[in-house]
Length: 402
Ligand code: EZ4
Ligand code: CO
Image 1 (cartoon, rainbow, N blue to C red):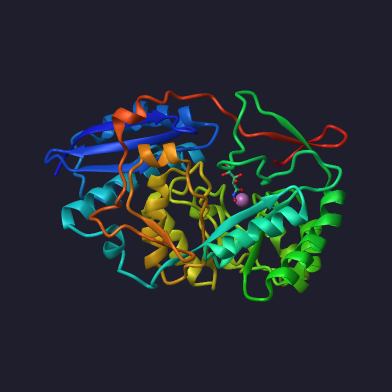
Image 2: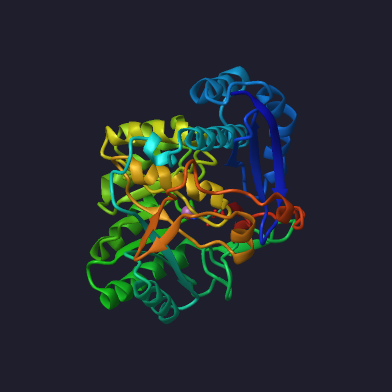
């Protein structure tokens, strides 16, 4: 079953997405997400210039061989652009295999390991009262897990805080906006927020918090210790993870669980974090970590060390990525949590899908393949708009991690 066409579709229904659509000689189609927030056209060009010509005429049934061909065959390994491009091909091939077999992809991955995929919602507001109200909304909708982010007194623009109604979207102006950060103000504020939230919701609601790479390991250790009374499910990206052994310092001081990985693109990004049990959850995604094939390899490796999945699921990952993530989430033995932010209505129109939310769980599609598609005609009505992620500086102007 040869691949006869491969289309790279760039569209902006509410935000930018890059999608690969493969077509076989029998007319079976498969889709893969290739969106890399703020760097979309780099992946689109990598696909169009370097990958599409290699796909035409290849056997669509050979998923693993195609993965190895694109990874080893490029000579240049890893990196978010390359791995997102490989991911898109891999995801589309799994979609095709499911359609050919007449089975949802999770059945090809071994079938169900659970009844539903537990997701967490984002409760964010400038004030603690605001966040309590948002979290109560999620609880009313049946969510069992909530990520809590608030404003910090003295800082005007803090990561993860929803500015107004509508979908949270950090990417905006073509040239990055700049925010000011103070670790001192942040560390002083956060424990009191969680004291209020835990008091309000009792011990059973799973609470999470995203530090977004802003602390050093010893600062993160202090935060983790100060949050221990509130029994978080995880603190996310407490420090940048390029220095994997740096997490030993955090681990030595706190039992607050740690989740890392939304910027990972390969198993090598977490090899030491996992094998030394320095983290509890790996948050890598289908789109940025080499597709279903490679992400499953990461999660299988993690399972050996009691590390669970916690896949990133922000709205800059398209419904194609979310659909694929759910097939993995439902099938792997070491699933932890899945992040979920509903997409804008216009995004859902461009990417029709049959996964669904009910009572705090997402359920993967039961259709053959991934159960998601892209409406190419509608997509063409939303041309690409340059949009960059913000930049973060300390109060003295020093560039800091955003
Ligand atoms: O900043 O997806 O946990 N979620 C996050 C996200 C990321 C964006 C970057 O594109 O940290 O909001
Ligand atoms: Co995050």
